[in-house]
Structures are given as structure tokens and as C-alpha cells.
Amino acid sequence: MLFAGMTSVIAKFGMKNLSSDVALSIRTVVVFVIVVTNAFFLNDAFTEIKNSPKSNLVFLAISGITTSLSWIFYYRAMKVGQVSYVVSIDKASIVVALLLSFLILKEPLTAKVLTGAAFILTGMLILIWK
Image (cartoon, rainbow, N blue to C red):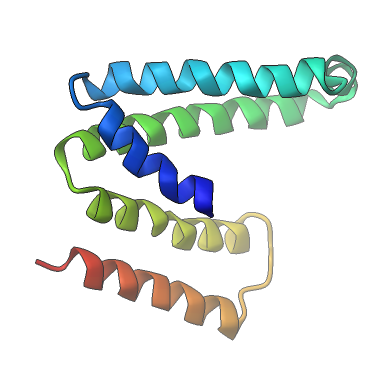
């Protein structure tokens, strides 16, 4: 929570004199180096990948595509908008994830989950209301 919260504010400072695409590229290279170091040098990623079903790899590749699109739109919005608005709208993606987890993964959609989702949407609307 702490690092995620710091990320957007730090990124806004970092892209001050850069386009959102260049800023995102720099961030992505840093993320790539850290993640690859963790997976391949500190863990046995080669064996895991070799033993994984191809469908897992396809779904992870699709997830990489959606992550890339999400980051591109997020950084472009951060470049022109206020961090508080952009982050609020971005975090409403939790509601999308909850609905998709119910529809696709058949996870339970309880009154508690629906209430939480309603509060998230309400909070986002309050924060971005002009």
C-alpha cells in the first residue's frame, strides 16, 4: 500500500520534462530489471516456465498486453491530469476485477463484496466530482 501510493506521486515528479511514453519506458526498464533479477537469478524461473502448461504462458502474455495498455493510459492521464483524480479512477478497476472474478473465475459474489465495490465506486465519484 505504501509503495503503491508513493509510485504515482513520484512518477508525476519524474515526468515533469518528459512525455508520458518516455517516462513509462524508463519506469518499465527499471521494473523489468528488478523482476528479471528476482525471477531468474534468485529463483528457478527457467524450470518453472519449462514445466508450465502453454495455456498458462498464453494467459500471462495476454495479461502482459492488458498491463501495458493500462500503464500507457495511466501515464498519459497522469501527465495531463491531477494525480488524485487519475489514481481514484484507476483504483476503481478493483470493481472491474471483482466482476470479472465472479463471471470468469466463478468466485463468490457476496453482499460484503458488493458493498465494498459500491463504496469504492462512491468514493471515486466523490473524489472526482467537480
